[in-house]
Image (cartoon, rainbow, N blue to C red):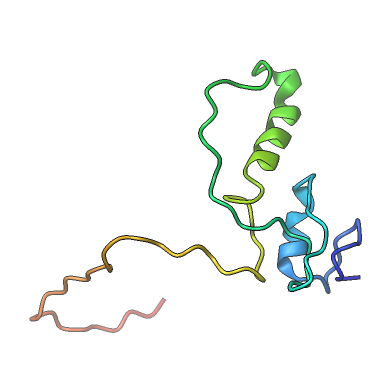
Length: 106
């Protein structure tokens, strides 16, 4: 177990394998990783229409469609792959120079 080929998730598997069981399509093992998670990818373009009618009867099919559509992007929880780098200017924290730190115990 834990090698990416099991069909049932077990506690000794990495979190990316345990959490990724809901994704119906997984890529075969990649030699440089110890999991079978899909390679990270940017999200696909926004769909212009639904693949089938949005009815209560199709709820499970729509859920599966969305999980599969975004498996490599938004729903990829693999801890063995680096997260994509963010672009843009560095975050700036503006703090009042006269602020007095106070402890907060919760």
